[in-house]
Length: 384
Image (cartoon, rainbow, N blue to C red; front, side, top):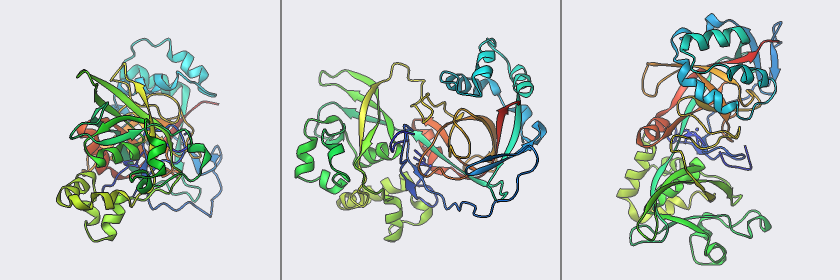
């Protein structure tokens, strides 16, 4: 990822759900910031078996196709667009496979399955101390109504990077930015758009990017994207964690709907809540010619809803097909499918750690906030 940005839910918002510990992505072009899980990196590695591969934070253990739960029933044709997106920027050792893929015009699931089984091998991903279990969280791309100019209801600005940002580190805190003073002067004229709710602005900042349904001064509307452009180099603090510590919400209530409900009931304390997080994110506006394309992840390609994940690149390299074995949020229904490692985030750390990109809109937002599931993963890799 680039400096900071992409996340969750996490932006692993990977979630404010359940434990509600949202942590921002600290570096890179990912679209979101994520919740930081309570993961402990191994300090006692075990020897690799014959044929195993050592990554800085993971061991890859040789496995068989029959080990993948649900492999025979996944709709691989739904995964193919994510692979094709990754092949737009192929790196070794994927160049050959991407070239062969170009010859497949409209393959069905069975054809794709044979194609992969003929060319790839399977590795079970484990921590260096041989633990195959980990954590799945989720993130999404917010969709927020906005206006180019402030209105009676839309007075919360989204800012572009101030000219002097690189000259002062750390830059001003959120509280200093949002009160009269030098920071406000430096940001004058840097407003991209205005939104109604300061919590919507915070969600965009935590997620690292989002879509705006933007009303122009002439009354016309268009859909644009705001993408991460920088931050003030201040520490990230979870507002959900603060509400829990204050006894205002229980851990299970600190989802975004729970936080917004608390804000509706405590309008005079919303500013106090926001100022608990000194981190402030700046954006750049991007056109959105194709609403079906997701934001770009750390790999530099658009994310595919339901088929892209954020990973720890020291465990799984970008562009790797990954088989995940988990369950859907608040359910025992299996979530077993092929996805692409195409993003990362500062909270996405460890061997068996993934953040599932749900997409954009209300339902993906709800799913991202609920996702905190047990996880096992397998990496697919070109044959030697």
